[in-house]
Image (cartoon, rainbow, N blue to C red):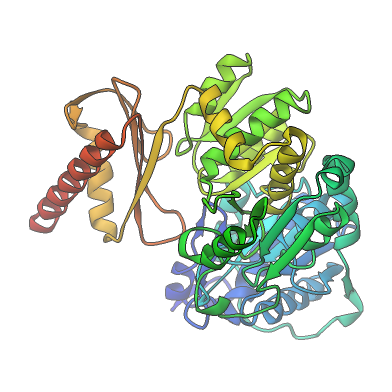
Length: 488
């Protein structure tokens, strides 16, 4: 235990509260406890005191996880005791929806209880400022610093008079309808399969699809705190049923979102699960060619450089950011951005809030099909070809100790290899992790995860054979570094 001023704080518990690329996540009943929720809420409130007046409400929302609504209520009671008026959503809510309402309602920002795509044992909390995008590092750094000066005790008085519920859906849907061509989609009469994955997008994405005249079949559109025994992640084996339904019924496309609906999942008419990189290319081309939009292209260091080729082709600015949509959102607030996205499945576009939105992303894919009148697989192939592709992306997730991860970053920074798989390393970047640029255009990124105990190794190459050789060499090199770090 440590004494800070007039209060006693459990230092070991504080040490477990770490903000990653998008807020704090932890395991429910281990580090994600009601006591720590109260502590983090008070730390956020301390920041709010410096940025807003109490005439502006604080919004609170939550996803479909176990106890999420109870954690949200706990935060609302803490904020109310501190003198804030609080508006809490009337049901679980997508992150982009509460983000939009944070701006629309002229709020002091929103607290969102979610662990996004992480498995059922996790919950999390993120603070969304009034500009409707992820909190920037200077804000989260302030919140983290505040944690050491607050207590975790329950409120002495429950001020229910300062807490009200509200429905965030109507204004968000009105906004989404202003961003898509409803009549064009209606005219296409698309046949769509939608897997909610037990997420917050149920009642939102299906509502928009039906409003746009799509013939729709839905799956898992109810709350299950165990996510059917899987993960609320719109990738791979989580989409097996969606793929089968698209293929069996010859649907035009299949759609899904992650747990808090800020990431998208797309299945084409052949049953192929599209990579986020392919969707970014498809939608960049659609926005330019079909909708006449212009602006910068913004991508993270881990996202395909085929977007760079589009930027050159269409004479658009290109910005590369660290991993984390907060950096893309920050750029969206600074300049006109046509599309901003990341390989993990998040994007936003011109005219939208500076927050990733899986609901809008899915609808823009439907809109692209409606404009072109072509199968989705063909549109993706055309977009990749127009960007001088294909290139091949791959990611390795390595469960490593903190010491091993630190040794890897230090080794590749201080003594980067001269070549990988026989290809010369021409440049090393430390924008986020360590990124190696190879002489013939391939790249490799080594980056410790900000939210999980992983070292991620991303790569992009122009051949699968080259990819295989790079994977083998990187795994060998990382293993050797681990052996040296253990011996030392």
